[in-house]
Length: 447
Image (cartoon, rainbow, N blue to C red; front, top):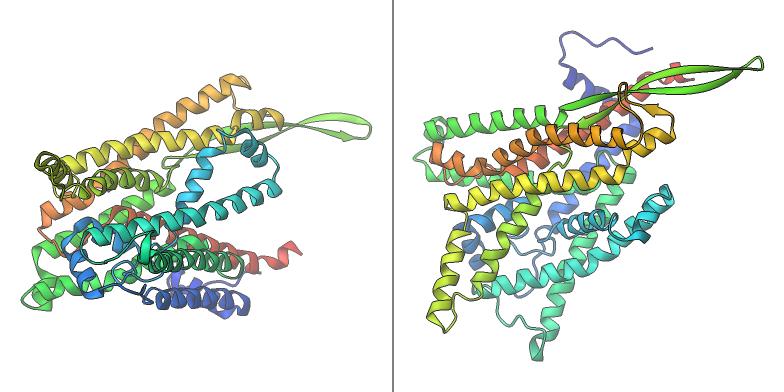
């Protein structure tokens, strides 16, 4: 029987005490924490041949690079072997998800149950390797254009040193992916998400410390109107993320089952629902949109030193527009987030084939005919609620720009994608932890 909780202790505190009181669950928590500690050690192992001091100066002066460094927990600022984090794996996962409905062989594999999913997961890991190598080389070329690195080339005497740096960074990414899988098997929470969460949270103390240094004193800095407003916006953003992430539209479903009793057949009805989430796409639209916004500025940076003054001038204009300091950048970012939210939501929804699965299992929505009418009804409902999720993601995406305008705080960065990841990982981990506790508390009833 479940033990009553002491009324003087908050529910969360009591849950943590219960978790550490169970040996197996305590082992899972300590294993997860240990993996995060190892990740932080790896984040400080630098790639050979990098001027770390010059690199940190570039990241301080570039807002976009500073935001990317926040996701890596300072690993990119130190140009460590973990500078890319697990993002090549995430990119590979997104590509595979988009390719499943396009390639018939992959679509057939996705319908083969657990064996098919394992095969697609294997393909995702294989795709991660070339993507990690390409992204690593791209980062090295970008740093060379900023004067941080020299001799990055895949030809001549620089071939072997460049290959060594690329392989080191790709190996760091694959090692982190492997650690994430270990957390899935032996720890608590989604391993890949936990690794990203650790990188984001690890960069927050240094960012707050820098904001304190800029003020006349720590107390005055903390009590300044800008910091107070900034903290209030952060709390409001986190609360809104929790509400929207958990919001869903429940579509009622009826199931008709046939039972044989005493040689006679009876029809029995069962009720359930389909939970359609307001934000089904999660943080993926923000990643897509950010990638699209980074691309023009990155390409333009290669032509800013062109010998042709017209080309160089156009390149400098494009680089300036996509530097993240103009309203144009954030307006385009907002529109891209809206578009990618609808695109990704519809792609994933079509892969689920809810209308066909309902019809196969004898389920139907009351008042809606099975088959195509059900699919059209679900698409209509999903489109309506996705507008709310898309606008919300767009507002969250442009929040850093308006937060700086309202507060005037430049040292702190209210990263929309970072907040979504952190809140999402915390909610998911807490749900898994609570499920583990409930399973153990009610184990006697199951037996």
